[in-house]
Length: 326
Image (cartoon, rainbow, N blue to C red; front, top):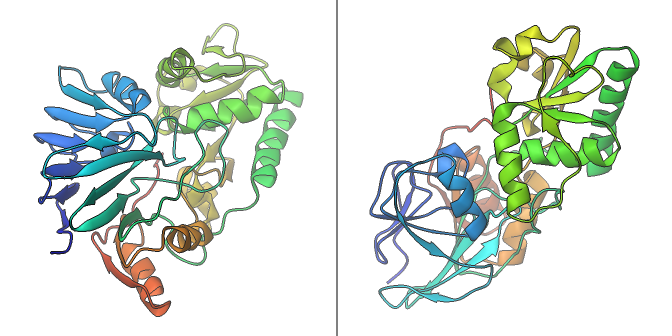
């Protein structure tokens, strides 16, 4: 009997009784990482120690936590052996590898193959069935080299500071903020973080990640600093009190024409924690699945691309996913 895969605000594997990244409260769910669109108030979760810790900052209440290290085997119910592998998306993010009499299955959650400055390196275990995110599943989504992206961000910040203007970088408080802190802080630029990102960054440090110096945004002393803040904070306090400022957004969607106007910023940099199109193809080649389910983003289009390459592929979800909006 093949693997049965269902989707309804999260992936469900009914043969073993587990949901994967369910958004509605479930009896049990694997949580690949702690971004808001991948977590819910579940009775039981399976996750890495880092993800469980970050999740506690976002969802209160008690839950049963099964914590696994990367590549640690866990004998679940129904004759299923589970392992977690690094997804490279954000700190502590994981892919779920499950093996039963139905064969092996790999669920990626959000992932990226490219090395990041604030996440572990992505693994590529083999599996018979692959359920993969396809946010950037069109050929036009090819990210520039990391050095080029980081260089553009640093040039933007240095030029603003030289002109006595405060550079403000908009990014998710979890994952992207810490990546930007590594880029800017390692270059020796002083950094202040919005309160939301500050809280998450403190937890990163508590969990063992080495980070450059940073401080909480202070309206009395912000001059001369690079500020990193969540996307929705641009029109709210305390950022409305910062003048003059020059703003930029860090998102893979910066590859789209007109991204600056779409996000209402002075600049947009294609810094992403998702795999681009070439890496999506490379990941499939490394996993060597017999069947692929595509999920999120351009799922239908990427499934068609795989079928054209002789790989059986089916989309699970058709709605295009965006990283953020301002």
